[in-house]
Length: 154
View 1 (cartoon, helix red, strand yellow):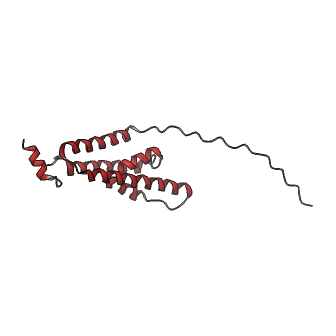
View 2 (cartoon, helix red, strand yellow; view 1 turned 180 degrees about the vertical axis):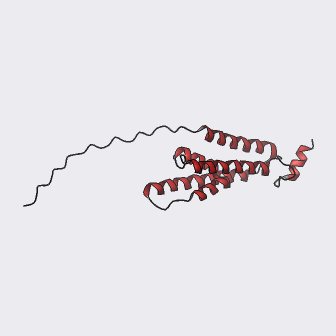
View 3 (tube, rainbow, N blue to C red; view 1 turned 135 degrees about the vertical axis):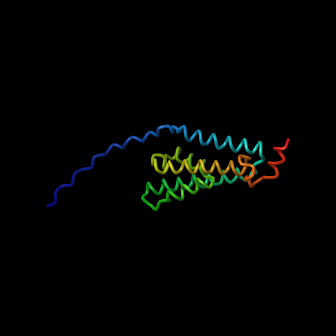
């Protein structure tokens, strides 16, 4: 005769996890503020084409979605997006979206080695923007050299 099966007791459901409010790092706020300020100042002073802002917006969206897909893949044990790809997307004008993803999704925000490389790509992108769209180095600025020299001759 088989042993009697134990009766199942109703188990209490675990309490839903409380989401703690997102506390933004000051470096993230500073970088986003600096990027927006640089873009606005350059647009007002040196006529940055509207397409540059569109590129930043589209690449930021692509980068944010890539971080979200990588986080989803990490949770489900599926194929992950390489860190190199995420860094390249950030360097290619997607860093504002990457910052939003790191802060809102809490993805790739604790890995110090990755964050070090990420901040290097942010600085390189901002320097590239400044070199392309401002007279930081007048002889090298390739986008609007004629417009820049006309404005600075006042």
